[in-house]
Amino acid sequence: MHGDPYPDNYFTSPLNIPLILSGGYGEMRTNHFHAGLDIKTQGRTGLPVLAAADGWVSRINVDAGGYGNALYVTHADGHQTVYAHLNAFAEPVASFIQETQYDRESFAVQVFPEKDQFPVSQGQVIARSGNSGSSGGPHLHFEIRDARTAEPLNPLLFGIDVKDSIAPRIFRFKVYALDGHSVIRLRDSQTGGWRVLSGGESAFVDVHQAADGSYAPTRVSRIEADGQIGFGVQTHDYHDGSTNRLGAYRITLTRSGKPLFSSVMERFSFSTTRYLNAHVDYAERRRSGRWVQRSYLLPGNKLPIYDAPGRGILTVGGDDRVYDMQYTVKDAFGHTSRLSFAVHGVELVAQNVPKSDTGASTEIMRWDRTFTYATRDMSLRIPARALYDDAPFSYEMLPRLEGKTYSDRHRIHNAETPLHTAMTVRLAADAVPPRLYEKVLVGMIDSRGQISSAGGAYSGGNVSTNVRTFGTFAIVADTTAPTISPLGYSRTQRSRVLQLRVRDDLSGIDSFRAEIDGSWRLFGHDAKNSLFEHRLDGRTPPGEHVLTVRVVDNKGNERVLELPFRR
Image 1: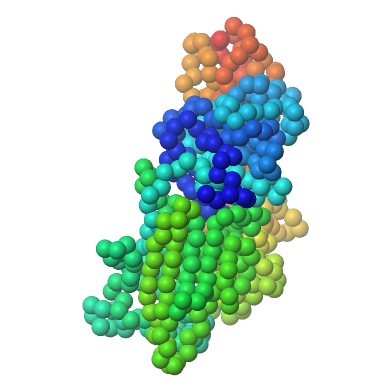
Image 2: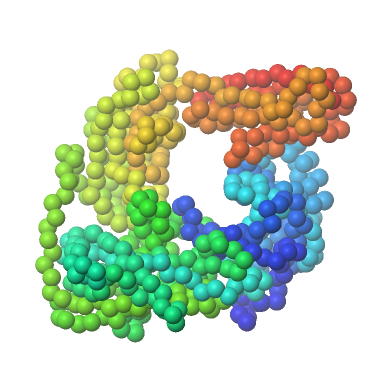
């Protein structure tokens, strides 16, 4: 029993089925922590969604991406529950939202009803489950928030009925030689050989689970170190009835019985959730797909979920001291896994490893200072605290892609270094003909030569954009209008549903407008499938009609489709 501030008996289940999770609170996602529980809906949409407690609908959101159709219910105890990726709202909210969409002539709307407008009772059906927004499959996303701060809280602390008898699993841990004076040696138990790390290098140590459930290193029989050492762990939690990997609730690392580091996924704010990229080993995630959680703090990490004296860094001296290290990983139900290993303090000499020379730059980007860099063809500005740690800057100019780019390619640092806030990139537009000034943007080019939009526009002889990732950039042009493809269309058949697939090849869709016989019509938008859909209703009587669709992309390219149909 948790008690205040997490009463176990205030909220009930939002679904009338056993709760099996596909996603957990605090689970690591791209650029953010997951803010709630993803509850499986048996592969179906349309299940009744129930109010978890008495309250009132305080916010209604409809969007093509993100949470899709979402309801926010505020409760008298100071909490707010969120129900997202819904298929449909229950009445009277459904009619209210449709009227609002027609009044605003917009599919995407956000409304904040008055307190007494839509009261709800615990267990009342308020919606139907779905797959709207950026959902990857049918499920209900459920959150409990602090209504005052809008911070999402861990729903499992409130006694939400999720069956869990499984302890977290520890897959491996990682050791880091944090600076140029740090050295780590790892002895292979099978070959007897040593691996030496220094100067910011790191390595995995695989583990095995013993019969009593505890974990210990495998293959590595001895760890020696000298200097500033950091650790990270790859661990995931699981729940009954599901093989989905979920996030751990509490991770603790001790040295010889004394606390070195702990993190607790109890609450966080949406304003800090991108610090996930400092919490994890971002470069490892990019390289291998593994989520390794650091057990030491990068200097630019401002997440408030830690207790880490000395930033969680282990300072090892060459004094033959043995540091008995132990990881303890717990889930919200108290199930626990432990990993033990020893670090031997040995006097070691750091090897000066020569760095590869790109011939471009030896400058250092300081995490707490603004960094600027300029050549004749490119200028860059990274604001202070956009980085989480200092990093040596790298830059390379590559030849343009004939027929695809209107500038040389500029490889700005590398994509394995995360950015918290956007940097400004300006590329000289000397090779852009005046007729394309309104059509050019900055393109990001991947290792296969595929181009995606990084946004931006022409101004004063440059094309500039703000972007939150390093990579390779060049000026490109979008002169192609979006495509509009009717699905299942037949001029001779009577229609009940009008479906369109709308795509753009580069800059993205800016606006979509559909009219039937000159009057605006509501088309639902499923962004992940590039799908627009309208179900004909009383606004369109039986007979012959004309659907007119106008789509404009972010560079002003327009496509118009006129489609006669019969109802």
